[in-house]
Length: 240
Image (tube, rainbow, N blue to C red; front, side, top):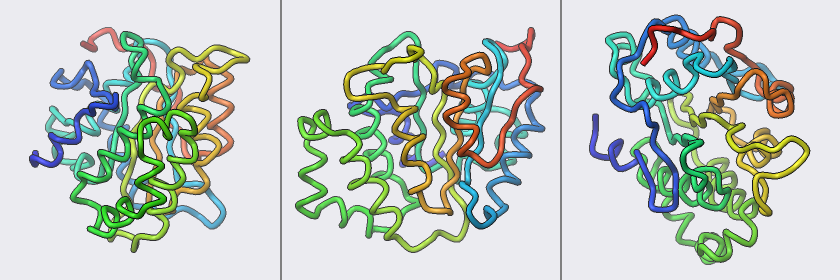
């Protein structure tokens, strides 16, 4: 994989890597194929381009998301989906920093800035006074949603569409989610993406994973994302 992709694997601000990175990927070739077909198909008019991966604990959701970004299997390498991954984030139960909203936003911007998939125009937009000010850590902590809009949504909408649909992968959105409450005072990653998903360009596929039994977060996204990968993600006993 390219040096740029390696640079995108983590972030000083907490955009996390997967704990399963480098582990063998088992028996999910059908999911890789469906995701590739979702990427290749342009969304219907008025339909938000996105895919929701659901399943119970140990069903292989994180393994699939990891394979999309850092493939180890022959099927994953052949699919080449990592070459169309603009950014990724893994919410970790072992590290609460990975669910802090302002860290997610700044880490996402770092990955977009480093990505060879975006034209130089994105970097130029980040240098403008209004955007660079929003990217100051203290300002982002105060209003992470405003930073997300100024440094992610608006710039991406103003860029020329790429030749192929790209994706952003966010795993385990329901980690540390408290029913009826917020993850922290600034809100959650799930709330941010759910509220603003419709503002992403139609050439960007949002791929999210959520535990099926977390009905609050599933409902938050199921009405907004046009495709799901449910059901067959049952617990795999031969998974690592």
